[in-house]
Structures are given as C-alpha cells and as structure tokens.
Image (cartoon, rainbow, N blue to C red; front, side, top):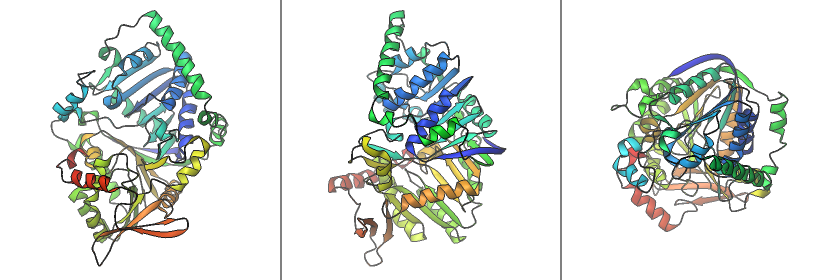
Length: 468
C-alpha cells in the first residue's frame, strides 16, 4: 500500500537515548489511544521501563493496543496475558506458532514455509497524531542500555497528516486473521491473587530499573525538555508511506499488490546523481547487483554501508553478503563496513556502558541526491523482500536528507568503518581504516578470528540465501 500526504513534521532520532525518551514521551502524553507494533519487544530493562508508562497510560483510560510478532515470545505468553487483563490494554500476537512449549523450535523447522514468515514492522503511534517508525525494536541494545553490544540505528518521529496513514497500516494488521488475541493463545487461568502479585512485582522491578545509572540519565535530557515545551525543530515536508499488506504472509504466491518493494522501485530509479544506503543485512543477489550496475552506468554514485564480520549480529547474513562483495566493487559500488569499535557510539554510551561494548549497525535508510530520505524497517536482503512484512517512508525534504547524509558520513568515516577495495595485483579484498590517527590495512576480515572466518566460509556454501 502507498499513500502520499501533505506537509507533516519529521524529526530524526539518531541518538539511541533520545529514541527511548521519544517513546516514553509519546506514551506519557497520550490522551486517547496508543497503538504499538513491533517485531521484538524484549523482556529486559528497557522493555519493563516502557511497559510501566504504557500501564500508567492505561490507568488514565488510554486505550492501548499492542501487536507483537511471535519470533521472540517463547515462555512469555503468561506474562503477556496478565498484562492484557487491564481493561484498557489489548494484546495480539502475529502469526503465532501452534506449539507454545518444548517443541516450538521444531515447529520452526517442520513448518518453515509459514513459521519463517514474520511481521518485521516497527510502529509506535500516540492518539493517531504522532508516530515513530524506523529500525528500532524495543530492547536494551536499541537504546544504548546493554553492556555487551549496542546498535547504531535510526527512527523518525512524525507528526501531522502522515500519522493517519501509519495508523491505517496498524489497523490493517490488527484486524488481520493472523493477529491472534493473547487470551486465545495462553492457557493459564488468571486468578485475582495472580494479578495483585504481578502488579506489585512489576512496580518493584520498575523502581529498581529507574534507579540504575542509565535510567537516571534520561529523566531530564535536552530532547525531553524540547518535546515537553514544543521546541523540537521539526522538518516540514511531504512524504509517501508504504507498507506490505499482511496477506504477504499467507499468499501462496508473492503477489505484487501485497508487496511494497515493487512500488518503491520506481522511486529509487528517480535518482539523478547519488544513493547513500545504510543496511545492516545486505544480500543483493544477482538481480540486485545487476540493478546497481544499471544505475551506475546511468552515472549514479552508489555508497553502501553495512556491518563488518566483527560487528554483525547475524553471521549467516554476512556469509550471504560476502560472496557479492567482489562483483559489487568491480562495477563501482563503494562498500563500507562498520567497525565493532565504532568511536562515536562509545562517546554516547557514557559511563553506564562497559568499555568492551561493541557496535553493530541496525539502521535501515537511504539518502537520494541529498533531497529525499527513505527510512523504515526493511533491509536489503531476500527476507525483507519475500518473507517478512515491512514499512517504509519516503520524505521529500532536502533538510532531513542532508541530516541523514551527515550521519552516514560520520558512520562510514575511517574512524568508524572499513572501506573495501580490490587489490589489482592479487585480486583479493583489502580493508582500510584509521586507528589512533594512523592508517591501517587488512587483507582479511578485520578483527575476526580464523575459526570465525572459516565458519562464515562454510555457511556461504549452503543454499540458504532465500532465507537470509
């Protein structure tokens, strides 16, 4: 589905802390409705922190609807059912597996044709007036709150007419036959003392979380002050909103009318000079390489930023990506891979994240000619194209596009990423970067051990590209 609307406001959420605060503020300021749709809603500190404010909104008689994909729901049916017992909270699980216990993973294997198709949408809507879409799920690693790994990500806070169309996409999924109420899934019988115990434990856990170093720092931030005093510097522009239809999951054939990718392609081909592409999972396939080649022959400069082997959180996807690097470089695509030690992420995580915390790219955006910004939940891989459902927005704003281009340049800088080239003599890949102000070069996957590289090589031999 595609909609184009007039003059909405947009604000880039590139800072992970601001992204969490934005969701909290939308929740605290909701008056009538909260619609929340995610691929993953973790049962961790950030998840509990936001859940507290969601519960408080429900106490104010805000009608809350939460739609979560089943991918990360193992062992959580009972807690979700307890949470949904509030009269103002409704929870549905998208495309749930039939088995809720021990044989859950076996069902993934046996029934992969259905179970492997997931709702990857990420949408947070307040009062049908404000919304957040982008790459982030709900979890510590998306908000700089994890001590081992944190994502480099991007969302957009939206206000105005575009939000009505984002809300329509949520309604289409909420009303889908694949969205099943948690009450129909969980077999636990809820008794009064269960609810009282749950509420008391939930409140105690929130108090402990709120008093940790990380969460103390987000009580009075610049972003929070600006939002509460209507001082955010929104970029006002027109936008087009795209989303896969939920029927994409159940269709025996992937029909064009259910997919947003075929509708987006003509937008990409309007490029006049440059495409900057950030995607954590990049498996272009032969058709993708051919499309890049066609665009480069038209004079379009293409720069792609993705994860290095040391930074990726999904090794199998890197195995699918690595086989296309020589062909992409040969046709003129500029490739950059994020370092696990990206410096700018370290500077934001401050004292509450350990020094060994690594960075991993999770942002999914594209800047066209520094005049248009594409941002959403989709990766450039077969899974996003064929298996998962996704949302995407095209914002026609030179100001916002240039802000995103600056973010791209900062992320792909020699301090934060590796630039890839082909050695003309050996025909092998080289990685160049900067360390302590000095240039450094590698002739193999940087900061990845021999066993890891061997494992990636073996994975690359498997016929699993369509699942990546």
